[in-house]
Length: 148
Image (cartoon, rainbow, N blue to C red; front, side, top):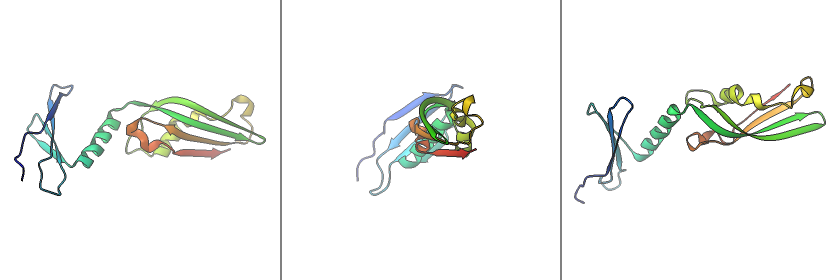
């Protein structure tokens, strides 16, 4: 068995001035996962496996993000004509509890259509997310469509 040693620690101050200390302990029983520990000013300690810590960090990053830049592909199909566009769009960041398809209709759907000359023409519209920030990678490839 190895001799325990102090793991490197990362510390940061929050906006309120509180300190947060994060450490990783690799000295664990054979076959067990390392432990990532978070200690706050009150002395409370939360311990996670690395996988859980990564999931938590992504959740925190998403919750702290106001807007995201996404690249979308818009396909507008009318009788006899089709159009495809790629747009770089900034939209409010979707929240983890929010239905992503509702979010797409609320914030990306406005980029469909070819203008007033097609307003009265029946059409099929589709929006697909081509790229998104790493913490929102789960959005890539999602599509919504509508007909009318």
